[in-house]
Length: 180
Image: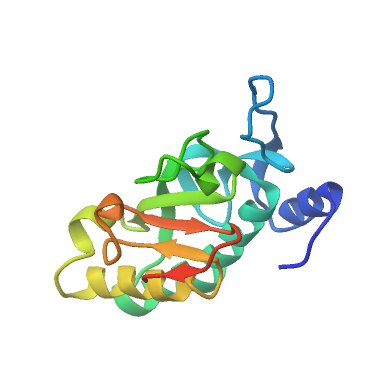
């Protein structure tokens, strides 16, 4: 992903039809939690169950991932499109889950947690309920998780650890890990 200036990044979001607004985050003096070019995204190519505060670079990557991976996988496995992505949010000034010494990529607006999808017919696909097992729903989620590894630097799924049994964690931080 090329490094874009803040104005180039927001112009790219506008060009792709992402519904967002520039945002600010309230920070405590000397807080290490900062977002480069923060935006509050209401929807991208899909509707979202709730807005998410994140860096513009992450918003661009999520939009591309939805368009290039999520929609085609849903049509292939489920025979219909996705109208909404359900998320647990993005920005949170906190430590990594299971760590006391390192900030999460959520603290920098570089991580996003997907909990499921709503299809065009209104049916729901849940990471927590549908990841394990077999069948079209599970196949769809597994393809989304595997393909995410080509778009994000870290992808954590229910396959990887007990902290991600109900979501797919996507981030664009400096580390590399893929358990999709």
